[in-house]
Image 1: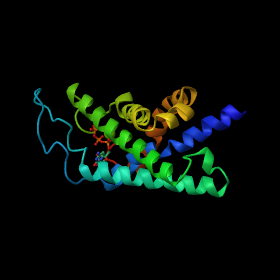
Image 2: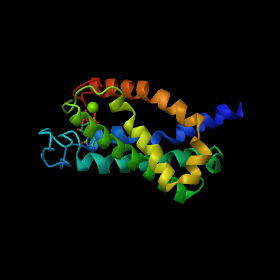
Image 3: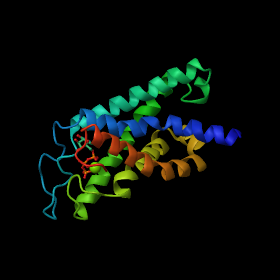
Image 4: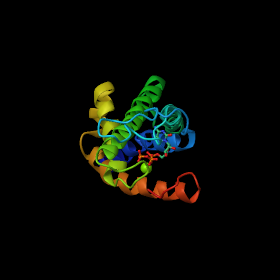
Length: 183
Ligand code: CTP
Ligand code: MG
């Protein structure tokens, strides 16, 4: 029972990494990161879908979301169980969201290299890199937190549920005319 609660708590604390992507969709579109440049293979380095406004806006929205989670969980007496203190409630979501959108860029880089154009369906390449990079960033910058809350069951559960969640969110974004394609 306690383990289930712990896994659910770890999932809730991971929401900033997920929301960061939606934040990028909302704030994106300005200052294309690769500035239109092509890689050695003649294809775009990243493509027009990766912009600085999306990257920074997504990180900001993800971080704020984490802080709100901290405040809400605190109101229910769970503050110590989540990000620990105000500093953690800002730093941990910041690290997660930054990892998330950095992984998103890495995914686009790989998509371009294997010949999938911007917006093309990438399957797990759309769904996993951001989550994996969020974990890697936590491992690098917030190791004790990562070890305590994500090794290993919560991380495995998250990697299993992220693809369907990502898909569902994108379908919603598509229906709301925020996204051009439902993936
Ligand atoms: N976005 C952005 N900057 C980012 C990430 C996302 O501006 N760093 C915005 C773009 O408008 C992008 C949308 O969010 O089109 C959806 O993101 P995503 O699905 O990751 O991009 P795609 O357009 O599908 O491009 P790619 O094939 O490179 O993933
Ligand atoms: Mg996409």
